[in-house]
Image (cartoon, rainbow, N blue to C red; front, side, top):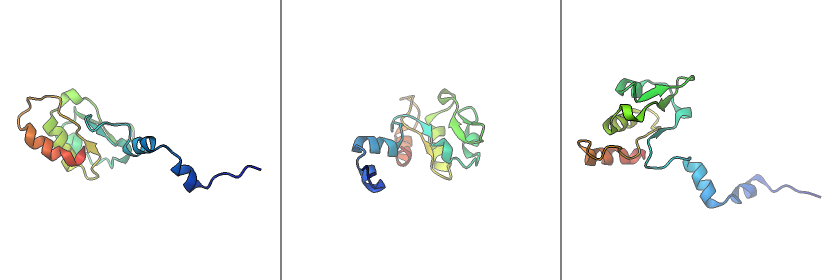
Length: 110
């Protein structure tokens, strides 16, 4: 006779690194990304740079072209996002002006 494990026991058998990766998503702290399914379509990011940020068919934001904007714009968008779903990652240009300040501002969103 087969008796299935209770759900709580089954969940605890998931290896810890796999569970952590699932909880954190497949994104590195170093890459810029948006948690698109959580986007409320407020348009704040597109007002900052509509070449950097785009909307998908559900009118939810995604990074359209990372090369079309600055790290400052990524950080500004992360700070203005109502639901904190924009993650600026690390800057692409190590010579961008004000980088030390931008990295400090970006840290809560990485």
